Length: 260
Image (cartoon, rainbow, N blue to C red; front, side, top):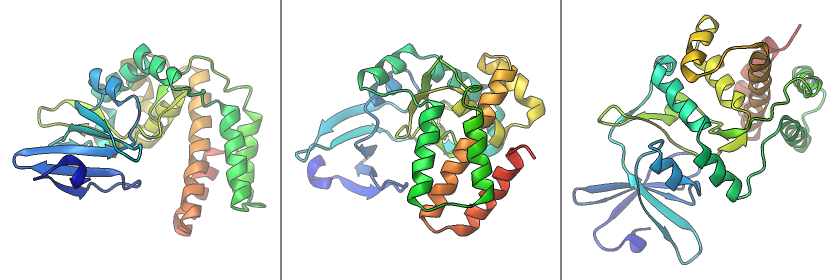
């Protein structure tokens, strides 16, 4: 990477799961580099959703490297996720016709509930997760609710709206970063994860009003369905890494989500 940038640059890993992110510095100039980042980073930058995109370059091996302004701010705290500006930025993302058009141009098929169930079945078979009563009960719930959670207004969803991905810069501007897992899907994917993780149920209606929707029965059903499906997905992620304590914790959480 240093050879690619030229003389005088010092490049250090930026951490993260993929190991594809770097911090590059030359004198007073510091940039955030990422290899093979989201192909619609330019649209996200233009709409002020992520820090400013400085340039994009292709390496000889075909990889694409992007450089963004390095944030000198901080991540949101968990308790700050209830703020109106979080709801407003998420609404801006979900309502962006430019983002949706870009996603469709690069051939992204909507992540439907049916696809989610089929993917989970395949993953569970791969890891030989059979005869587990909690997971079996959760999968049965997902299948039984497939008709109930059908929704045809698909938007671009971030799909990993953990508070660590919400960043405030030095001027207190809010960004949502790390778009590698984004999908075209039901907005209830993002809304469910955010509300269940960070907002007390008594505050859901007010938070969603700031986002721009009413909390009706359909939205409740869909959010709950996606939280169950995402919990199974995270459970499988921990299972792959043999993190069995986390697997057991998630089983307990899953059981609390399911009808008795």
